[in-house]
Length: 219
Image (cartoon, rainbow, N blue to C red; front, top):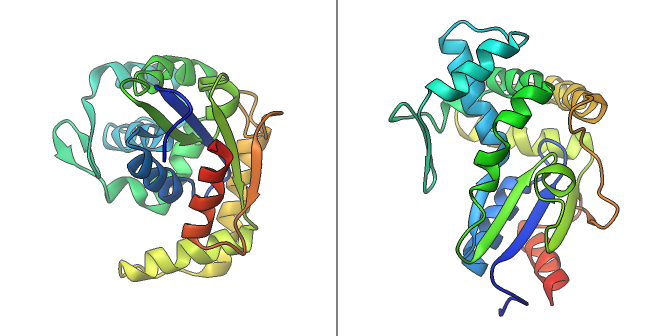
């Protein structure tokens, strides 16, 4: 399809497990746009903090860490100090830690320029928690993807089981609900629906149907 303009910017927000990452990647490939997984940035910082024994509340050390580590995104791979850590940042522990450090406004400010640097060339599909409200408030298209906590837990359950992990869907549901609460109630860039965002509930939608609905918003 032909975009209305070049560069074109699509910002997608939504809670954990709503399918933002999968959908944003597919759309970026279909439209030949760059892709930003903003949550991965926090996950890399969380892993780096864990390695360096920095707690989630030590904001000054976390900010210093951002300046000292070498973070790269190459295709499907995420690298920390030239080591592939793609799978390591997707554990439940790192997910929880990244949510805890994301509440710090000074840390969020520190990585703002890094997030915005992905917008170049033909444009960008950016997904996260505050893409539509803070990082890219002037995006050409804003989308809020949603799904029920149980649906999101079930998707995560299937994903983890397929990788050989032993998990409990009730525990995953509780973790997702706790993360939703942290994301929506934090003072720094809380998760919320932008006034001009298109809202999509994906409970009864396939991945393909969700992609098609978002592409239809561009027409």
